[in-house]
Each structure stands twice: as C-alpha cells, then as structure tokens.
Amino acid sequence: GLKPRPEQAQQPAFRVVEELVAVTEPVPGSVEAKQATLVASRIIARIERILVRAGDTVREGQLLLELERTDLEARVAQAGNQITAARARFTEAERNLQRSIELQQRGLLSASDREAAQATRDSLQADLQRMEQGLEEARAALAYASIHSPLDGRVVDRFAEPGDMAAPGTTLLSLYNPLSLRVEASVREQLAVTLAVGQAVSVSLPALDSVVQGSIEEIVPAAEPGSRSFLVKIRLPYDDRLLPGLYARVDVPAGSERRMRVPEALLAQVGQLWVATVAGPEGPERRFLRVGKRDGDGRVEVVAGLQAGDELLAQSSER
Image (cartoon, rainbow, N blue to C red; front, side, top):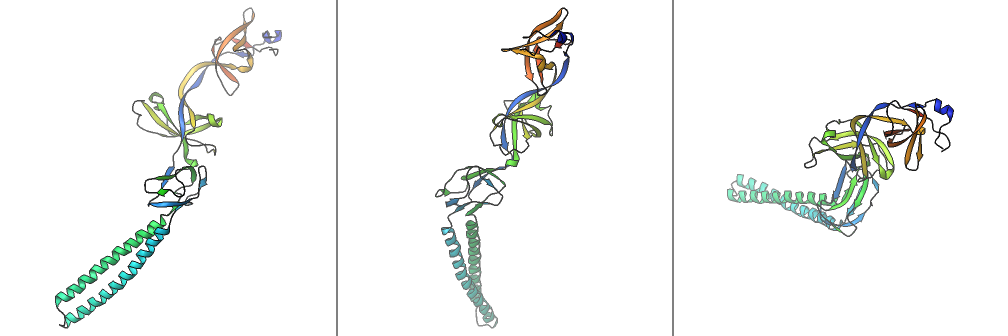
C-alpha cells in the first residue's frame, strides 16, 4: 500500500529543507486574580442573614450580609437619651454660670463661687462631648451591621452561616474580580531575562481545552530564592469559564533552532511508525522516520530519518 504510483515517483512533491523555527519551553502556572478581597465584619455581632453563595456575581455596593441590629439600635437609642439629659444639665449649668458672672460683677458673689459655676459648666460640656462621640460610634456600629461588596466580582466561597458570630478579623466571604484574572508562572532565570512586558505568549488551559494568546503584564524584578526563577504575570483575554486556581501552561519563547518540517500529507503511518517515500538514485525509497511536534499548518517536525535535500514523493492513496 506504500508503493507510489509511477507518475508520482517521477514528480517529487516536496524538497526537504532546514528551517529556522522558533522554540518554546512549556512552563507550568496557575490562574490567579489580581483583584481579590476577603470580606470581614468590623464589629462583634451575630449574623442574621447572608444574601450570596459561592459562584454568585455581585456588584460594587451590593448588600452581601446583615448582622443582628437589635442590640446596636438599643445602643443608639440609649446614647441619644443620655445626650438629651446631658444637654439639659449643660444648658442649666450655662445659665447658672451667666448668673454667677452678673452677681460677681455686682459684688454679690465671691470669685470662688463663680469659679465653681465655671468648673461645673466645663465638666458638663466635656460629658456632653464624650456622649456625642459615643452616639457617633453607636451609629457607625449600626451602619457596619450591613456589609456591602467592595468590588464588582464573583463570590469564591463563604465561610459563615446565619447564626454564627462575626468578629473583626474573621473572614466571612471571599470575592474576586473575573476581569482581573491572569496567569502567574515561575520562569527560570535564563528565559526570564529575555522576556519583556507587553510580549505575547501562548497559554494553554487544559481544563477548558483552550489555547489563548496572553500578554506579559508584569515581571517581578527579583528571583525567587532557591529556585532562581522569576514570577511572570500574564494578562488573559476574558473568558467567563476562567476560575482562580486553574492549571495553565505557558509556552515561553526560548530562541530558535534549525529543524526540518514536512507536510504531514506526504507521510504514511504504519502502526506507531511514520514512513516517507523519498526519490532515490535507483527509484523510490521507503524511509522510517522519528517525528516531533505537529504544527497547526499541517506540517510535522522530522527528528530523524530525513536530511536536507531529500525529495519526498506523494504517498499512494491506498494505505
């Protein structure tokens, strides 16, 4: 089935040449979010309701969860009542001070009595200011009972349920911005020093069965200790299937090599073997080949079995 027809044997279909081919080195990486945040409470309170779940899309300013407000509202009301009473006491002390000043000017009150009235008024004024500050704090705590999204994005996970106690420093939700996803990969120093911000690189995402063109966004200007590699961050085109943590393979440019590539259509495959028919001095010759990468343009790299100048003949259609 591999013997070419006579007319094909007379007409070589392809002359083998060595080409200068760009070489890449595959480097493992992962999809990470440039813009991500952990949502926590600023106050200690029990969680009343959570309005989102993992995977939900949220807008900046959207209400995410609410804490119980009963105690917080009571604190605001109590602080308001205390201020009303303190303001009445302060107003009375202010009037007493004015009377004391007038009586002292008329010689009807000693200086020490006027000073006592002044001290009472100043003390009540300080109390009133302290209570007004307490009211502001109570109002702020009440406002913190409603927790809103700090960004447009997606919920990665939620770490609490209604009824749980929220406290400062305890993560309740994690969010990320899908538009900020990029690939981060550690590239060995010999390759990293040849890269530049803005350079295009090919990125494979096996989980999505996808190959995309990325653009180098950042090269961290310090080698990672131990590995002697540099962290390279690559911007990706938006794809709503992308998720943080996905495995990625970056094809990093690694110079060029002389290689032989021939049209795959001129080769035959017999089991695991690749075969070419070459024009020889005494007629067609069959050569067994070792092949490398197949390219998207229909060509395949020949690692062994051919040399530059060989003339390939078309295979018989009978395989």
